Figure 1: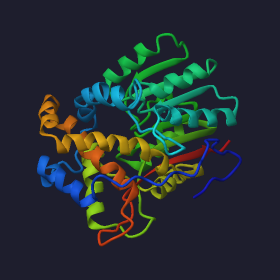
Figure 2: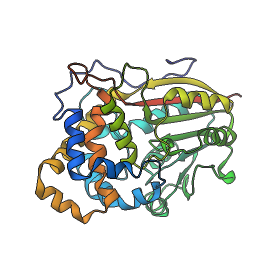
Figure 3: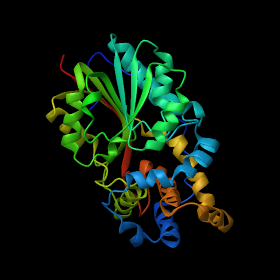
Figure 4: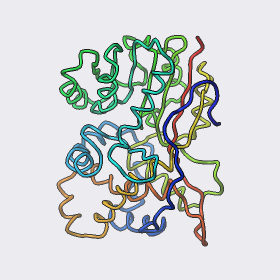
Length: 338
């Protein structure tokens, strides 16, 4: 589904440079994971609900590594680099995409971010739109506390602890809902989509940036399917990734109309390739692995997702191990009838 209707995204889309060769093949990456973590041991956690423990145990990974060496303060998501060259500015692009929707809609009064983490996107948007009320909803008390502290100078930003399954009734009646790499954790897809629809005012918009299971780009190998399962376990996605088509159908069943779906995978690749480079140090250097022992088990699993992510996004075009990608990164925009 391409862009439809009057709304469009004004991000600059450039021809991208050819990708550098991957440091490992998919089979090699799975082999490294098996030696350090045990593939079967990881798969024993498949389908289990441990979203909250994962984020609690990954605090050091995000704050002492991801924010310090790769992203920006408070960031817990991928960057989007539209010129194909890694830059930390790319971690603000999701917020810029929401800003575009707000500008195109006009007359926006209330915005809700679900799964806001430590508030990066809500804080940035609140600073740009002082006349709009922004609320961030997150499962973890620790995230809400940090976001609240970071937004102390923004009277139009507030943060609330809670789940989006369902969205609390007190937070309903908003003009825009957005989620960045969080709605993949939805267990009951139809219930979540209905809660979103019920929470939006007439004419409201939903914006999703997330990973989706990719079923449309050709045959997927057994290794790619296994890698996708390992990614889901590594990030604690209990119901597994759904395709964007499944999300679109569920949103339309809830009464929302899809505006557009856009594949952002090429623009997410620079940040995940850089992250994969750090993961290669973990798998290739015993001293790094020794240092990582200060992390909990779930925190160390970020090395699994980091080494796999570019391979899942790109697939493998040639040779006996050729496979279509297993996962894509997309932006979905839906609207509620006015």
